[in-house]
Picture 1 (tube, rainbow, N blue to C red):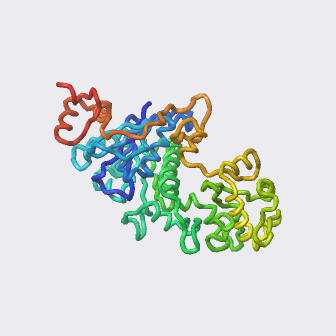
Picture 2 (cartoon, rainbow, N blue to C red):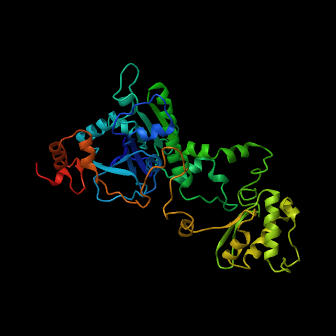
Length: 436
């Protein structure tokens, strides 16, 4: 069975960077013996994603599912362009949700869907008449699709003082407690672009929630509402450091930012600049790995290399916090004696936990494609989903007529909707290009 993701147009109010809905176009039949692969290849997803600046948790959740066998339809606004690069394996339906006809089409799609992803601010879909109660029912009132998994992505928690505010990744990780613990300077932390909240705490958590809800539906036959907010998602992803911080004598995060083992305080877990400006990462936490690193490092330096006072590190320098400033200075000056390639060659094949920091272009040389490949790699009798990794652009409305035809609309109805400005179709050979 095929699956598709629809994305809502920008004219709708959005959480921050994106909004989206994921829906399937055919009813999902629960097999008697239900596995994760059976669910994924049997379900048909449609998702509606409104994306801001190409950075969006909704499209990423859809990408994860599309990469693993789901057919995804992205619902776009009536526009001629899109910045969504997370579009491989997806189709596009361009529709105006501000019109009653547009809303009815979406209601029809969701009524036959397995999954819908809603990353709008709280209440937006309810105002459009597309909230979860319409499909899942409420109390004694039966819904239009009681098997629907209704996944909702918000930026801030849906209750509390921030629930109606706009925000971005940096704001969500700020409230999670995780940002304050990240490396930086004594004055302030540095933020890891928009990876933590948008993609780890948002999109990935949403995809996991959808799969868990589908497993539950395989048992009960009932749909679920999956609530994801990027503040809580980031906190969950950050469980290890946040729990460590609660321990009064934690060996990892007891001190202020920049003084601990994993936040730049330890010389043996840091990044160093080489003679040519290249960078080397060092992460030899365990004593045996530190020994492999420092012995290899000393052998690769000139025999008389030392600090101005003659200091050179020993194995005990790793656990002597008082020597950390000297150790850091020694490593900084040592790495500057040669190029990144030189140091990469020194440590290649060893347990020193020291490897070069690669650019995106350099890193792609280690894989079959310059584009990130689906992961994890799952082997078995089903084999991997076939995706075109090079797809980084999907024209809005490219599959509108096909999708509406599959939904049961006639060519006459599709042409009428196009004439009324409700939909847009950009496909070659579309019914809109032929006379009735």
